[in-house]
Length: 194
Length: 424
Ligand SMILES: Cc1cc2nc3c(=O)[nH]c(=O)nc-3n(C[C@H](O)[C@H](O)[C@H](O)COP(=O)(O)O)c2cc1C
Ligand code: SF4
Ligand code: FES
Image: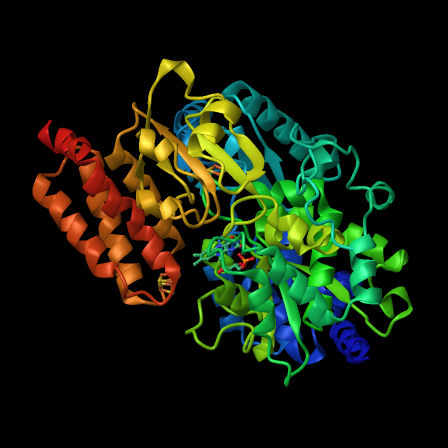
């Protein structure tokens, strides 16, 4: 199948993303018809964001080359979708839902109080550069407000039925983990699972 | 073969994980009749027969518009191939969290529904488009799809026939508009998630310009039960024109928020008071939104509470059933604050493609903010009403129309709330 042609082409060019994630890229491209490689742009951006929680210009260019898109086209995708970042932020983005159903259950007070305790405003990052607090729209967990998700290079994790004290405890754990280095993320799970 | 006249099962039809633990395990799902419907469809029924059964069931799309599902499948253009199925798992309407529970709790029934739909429209490739935040769900669906391939329920030559099917997941990245089916298809093609001009509709011009069925997760999760028990059996549930069970996502000022699977036609009163436990802290109910943030505000009087939640009855109280995301609003909530909230959402989510929606929502954010903060006069309220009215009917997609629902109905039906905030 054409898929393997695509993959070998990819692995040949030894730019960072393709050399590091050759197998992943191959698997992503295999999902779409060979003449529709562009469909892979969103999964490739996620892959690129795994490292540092943002995608730099060079990586956008590389993705463009893999898919036959211009760098500008890739950049416009990054700009359009809110889960992609083109500049560095905190290591962990705590994204609190303050949309209507959650707001009716106290999410706005939760946000204000948590930010106060951290000494920052919504949208800002703590001084140690680790925690960014963001206000986001509905995350499809409206029955368990207050709730937030933590977005990091490791992915996204939901935390539901939260209190400010809970959240501060989690933030402490994230800080400890950040100083111990990666690989400890798995030890923290959201209580919403199962 | 049809279980005509038989009583619907006592338990859940969609949220079956609530009775059957570990139904998200393939073995357990199979022990409970899993993939019998797909086997029956592929080995004993022709594709058109499957579609016919779904038509008989009266199933209507659960993504919001309530369009008859079987009818949609017949619109597929059979002169052009390949065909695609795209399951809409974008679920971003504020107040909606039912597809998430299905995919987490009862994923194989959903996947079986995707497969049966694909067989019916002669598609050999199906995609599941999930909102980016459902990253973990996508990972578990990927594992479940692999398990199905290993067990011969997906892949080449299903059940020894010449029918083959592959299903893949695709993650969005935080854009409500990608729930709109044509924006979703654009997004899947690696473009900005902006709606297409319609017609043509997806069944003739869909993914990569090919005939495509886009159906909601809940819609597709109904399908295995319809094929297993027959369309006539399914019609026993719900009302004559709104058949079947529906998952109502109940949120807001209510004692027990949550997903409730109930027959279409259940009243608001039963949902909110019997199942939801009523309004907490001894407060009174003031308003209801039936379709998430995209709803007009229903005045929660006795007439409204006794209204049946089905596609025909909700319009009698000036609203739509939509995705049946019921947001309960108590008497402490100020409607100007509420519409500022909804407009904030729509302004954020407008894709910017057409001027009335992009500019209109920009103006409405400023106006509703001033009004909610008590820094406006009644003239500003009239101006807001005017701006909203001008957006009506001028937008490329329904998002623009959704954005003004709460504003217009709020000002019309809760005028005293506005008089209060502008007065002080
Ligand atoms: C702004 C907007 C957002 C939408 N979001 C969703 C969504 O998140 N999930 C969904 O299934 N349908 C959504 N829809 C409806 C889809 O366009 C489409 O009608 C639906 O997926 C068809 O499936 P159904 O017939 O099974 O309901 C949305 C529509 C609009 C206009
Ligand atoms: S109505 Fe709004 S969301 Fe829809 S196409 Fe126009 S700008 Fe985009
Ligand atoms: S409104 Fe917050 S998760 Fe839905």
